Amino acid sequence: MPSHQQLMQIIGIQTEIAKLGLDLGGVMQYIVEQTLGLIDANGAAIELAEDGDMVYRAAAGIAGPQLGLHLKINASLSGLSVISGETLNCTDSETDPRVDREACRKVGLRSMIVMPLKHKGVTVGVLKAMSAEPNKFQQRDMMLLGMLSEVVAAAMYFSAKYDSDDLFYKATHDGMTGLANRALFMDRLKNVVAHSHRECQPSGVLMIDMDGLKQINDVYGHRVGDAVLVEFSQRVKAGTRSTDTVARLGGDEFGVILTPIEDVESIDAAVRRIDEEIRRPFFFEDQPYQLEASIGAAVTPVDGSESDRLLEVADKRMYATKRRRKQPAS
Image (tube, rainbow, N blue to C red):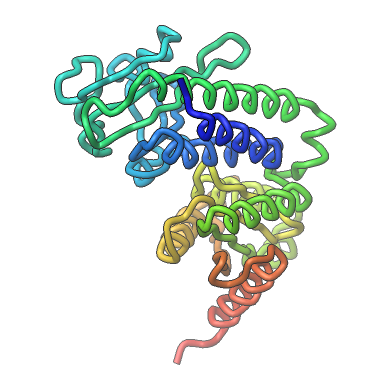
């Protein structure tokens, strides 16, 4: 049976999830992070079933670098758990014929528990705990992971329920782009900053200003400007992860909350990824348009431990980038 301390940890996790509210990406990431200490796992992931694949949508520990990894549903232990709806235990990935052995070696795991996540009676994904050692997990660990899976499933239910509510969606999302609006962005930023402070884990924020929108509106009209703006927003979204929050803060101004991150270098990589995505050629009605953006970044706790301070730092760096671009080449 789980110890008293472990049961208290479960209660604490449930309380923290209540604070995260409807931020499903934040809930999933928090769960995998807590799994590590709860059952002494080396890694953890939440995989969702998407178009015939199992996709790492939240990951921590040794699984962290594999965020976004795809496994075939019909050729992995995760897929088998989704298909059967059963909890599965692998004692050694080197001898278990059910696993994707190449993926296991890539992650660095030797044993794992795979727990199905059920939403409205349908298994839509799994919570997976991993160890670099064979024969790591016991029946008690499976019971604890089962408690966490129920918490995730409940969060998925309420997130889906309220996200599909038209009034809630309109109140929290930008009508033109479908991105989160300023209110939802600020709410999630405060939660992420508070969580980062409690867990001593860095997170980042980006301020992004779309360059040249006014000129496009002036020369080609607002119909073209709106099309360019929507395309720009989709590209910013495409350059981020499912655990990140992308928002249109107003006009041609966007914000991104990056969580989790490993270090400052992770922020730089995210900026490069988004910038490359934005700069790809774009044609609207056979007319080419150059999409560009000025991006500023801040990371907690290095640049501050308050959301307003982080936004201020990121905003100043964004405008510094914009000024450098406008300076003539020497």
